[in-house]
Length: 208
Image 1 (cartoon, one colour):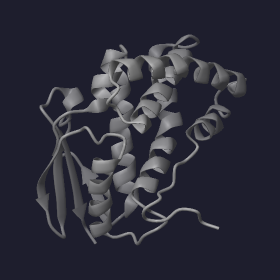
Image 2 (cartoon, rainbow, N blue to C red; image 1 turned 60 degrees about the vertical axis):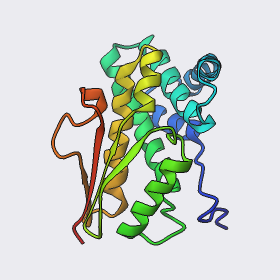
Image 3 (cartoon, rainbow, N blue to C red; image 1 turned 90 degrees about the vertical axis):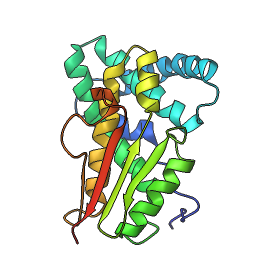
Image 4 (cartoon, helix red, strand yellow; image 1 turned 135 degrees about the vertical axis):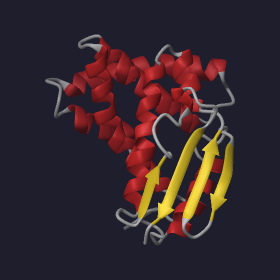
């Protein structure tokens, strides 16, 4: 039986999803995952001490991505390690956001996409980001995010390149919610904070 509802969204088992992907790439994924989870403990401690205001869910996300990347870089070049982090964490990000957007618990409509995105912004892991709604109607939903918690924290950890993993999740999630009917874009390339802009652009267009 489904144990979730609109007010109690799904919380996927993140390490299990990552492990499932790693088993397709690494010889001993179980042992590697154990090392990653040990490394994660120190990162959690560091973030929690330096930024106690960060939501627990945010700390959990950043720490496991950073630990995974750090461990992978010990055995392969940085570019390949980053690619494997993306391959491992994009399914995680999709599962987490589909939970936040109540994909199983409610109807898939443009209105619900907007409502649950705004609810997630207020209650979810990046609730300390400042979001500005630019346009909201039955055809277009555009908003700007004026600070990026992920960029800030990954930069403090010396791994700013991991921000790209989170940006990729945005594309996957918004374009998967109502495929063929809702299209997500950023009004061109380079329109994110990690690219040097003052804010990240998010545009969802209802084509249905």
